[in-house]
Image (cartoon, rainbow, N blue to C red):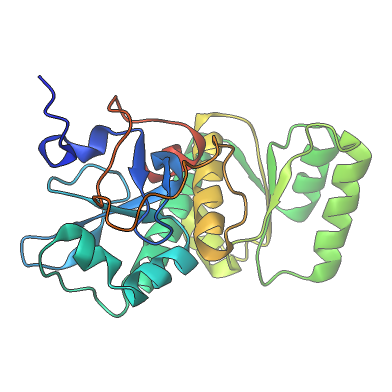
Length: 244
C-alpha cells in the first residue's frame, strides 16, 4: 500500500520530479538525478540506477549552477553532502563520453561513413540520418554540406548536422585518424548517439529541448523537495534515453 510519502518510494521509478533549481515539477526526461556516494560526495546518476535518495535538477549546466549557488542540493537531501567544485565539468565529460561511446558502437554496426566525398554521396543518395563535422573543421566544408542537405532533402526529413566534437574526439571514437566529416546511417545505435548528442547540447546551452508536456505550476516555497505525481517504470520520453 502506498504511504503517500515520496521518501518511502523508489524515486528512480518516477515519471515526474521536482527540479531543485526552478522549483517546477517536470518529466524526468528533462532532469538529471544525483545521489550521495557512501563517502558523502554528490554524484551524478546519468543512468538513474544508483541506490539512495535522489535529488533532481533540470539537465542544463545553468540550472545545475543555480542549484549549487542556492545550496539547493543539500537542502533537498536534508543532510550534509560534499559538492565537488568541478562537478559540472565532470557531468559534461560524462555526457560527452556517453555520446562518443555510442558513436563507436554505431561505427562497429557499420552505420558510420567517414570521409568528405563519401559523406556527400550519402547525402545525395538520401542515406544520411545525420551528418557529423568536427568542431575544428573548416567553415567552407560545413557550408557545402549544408547546401547539399538542402538540395537533397528539400528541408523534408533532412538529417541534422552534429558539431559537438573535435576531430581528436572523432578519431578516438571511430578508431581512425583525421576524421573531419562522417555520415550516420539509420539504426538503433545511430538513434542512441543522436539522443546522447541532444542531452549534451541541452546540458551545455539548453538547446534541443525535448518535446515534453509543460511543467507543472511552481510549488510553494515550503513544499517537500521530493514530490512525484506519478510512479511507474522509467520513462523513455524526450531525453531520458540519453542517459541510458
